[in-house]
Amino acid sequence: MHELVDVLGHVLPQHAEDSNGLRTMLVLATATAYEQEPASIDVTLVAWPDRDHYDGGLGPEQGLWEDGRCARCDVEVTSNAKRAYCPVCNTPCTLT
Ligand SMILES: [Zn+2]
Image 1: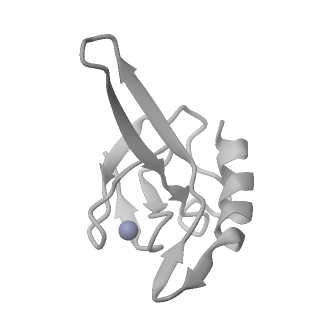
Image 2 (image 1 turned 45 degrees about the vertical axis):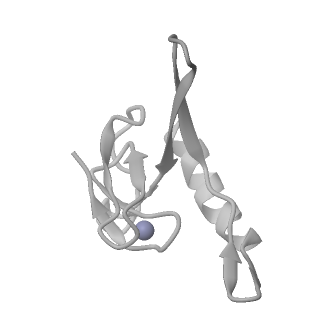
């Protein structure tokens, strides 16, 4: 999983488009569906691990267990790493 996140972290930001004062970008996200009526889905953006903090590596080899919110744009983010960057605004996030 963390290698996939790393590859997408390099590729997806290159597809951002700016038009009429709007910036549209592709991000990786998780979608959690709850088995209830009416249907409910939580969408969380995947934050890119802070490679500098992990000596050029990708952080812990685990699933997307770390969660939090971006302090700047207030989106909910998740990552395998406690230190990661928001995929929308690139702000460093400290996840727990
Ligand atoms: Zn952000």
